[in-house]
Length: 298
Image 1 (spheres, rainbow, N blue to C red):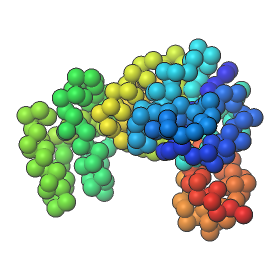
Image 2 (image 1 turned 90 degrees about the vertical axis):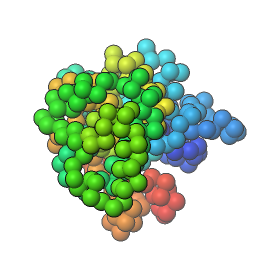
Image 3 (image 1 turned 45 degrees about the vertical axis):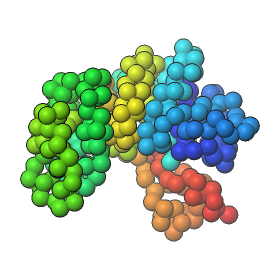
Image 4 (image 1 turned 30 degrees about the horizontal axis):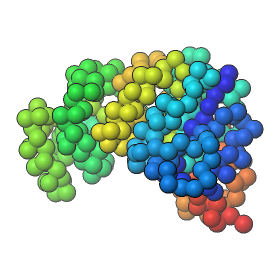
């Protein structure tokens, strides 16, 4: 089952390219990289594809790569970032079995509703919503209609509150944002409900079957052009484009990502790569600051 892996970088970084190449070379036949705005760099490797989006919209650069790669050669496409590695036991021969891709069409780390369950994330929500306010005339042309998107969210999550509750408007830091929503209420259809239904999660691994790739690439391009943050766009698109039974949500299926903070990278693992992977054998993806590890390991 031939798989290509595309590793999306925040910038051109030869050390990271060498690290990932060495790690994946015996696991995947074809390894590609993307990096934004790297056209002017000299002596670029042939498997590096230059994108035109910020790392915050790395999926847009992945779309550029997917439009250039001859996808008929692959049954599965694995998208990852510079912030981690797939479990060392996974190869292109066993990827389908490991992630149960005969029963699912897409693999995501997690998906949680961005609204309606508590107030801890309100400060971050206002930044997530900006593209849906300032680009309202654009996304309304190209995105799934609001009511249809709400229905998809409710089908996946069981419930999805589309109203911004009083805890949002009570936060002083939201005064400017509330005023902006009120100013755009004619476009948005009122300011008391969310501009668009969204999900969120970490997004450092995203695996697709080839038979679904065209509709994904099209949506990647549209959402990246509007400027939606990757940790909002990717889980939202998974929920909107696929039925619940088609999504292998790793967290919900008891295979969570292992996330190692920088403090633990030093105090627990001593920047030792073998130590890191030896303690994460049951996790499908290990998320850590690889660049930091490369700078500090002995």
